[in-house]
Image 1: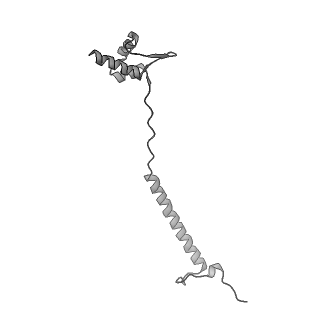
Image 2: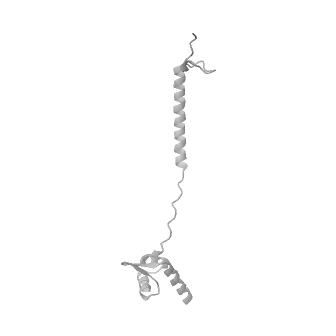
Image 3: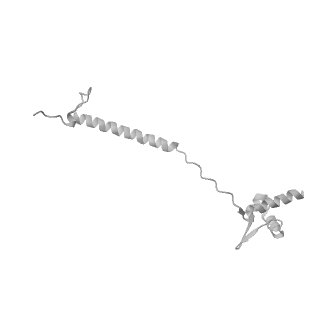
Length: 115
């Protein structure tokens, strides 16, 4: 009966200088080198990946008195006086006083019309 060569005894054409174990060692080294190269490529891709900026928050519809003062380029006391006099609309939510953005727009429209 003829003996069939095992998988480690098969030598590819042109590779007569390597035998079984040497061929396995070379394949392992080539696989390790390819794995290292893939790891480096993935690190480069990670560095190049740019996350999209977060979606901007919608602008607030209700402003605190200091925020309204800043939006109008006025002092806080002046805005309190405008709210107290009714020239600048505001809403009260619990103990908090807020100035709707629409009230600022209306106030600016009134100021423009009066000038």
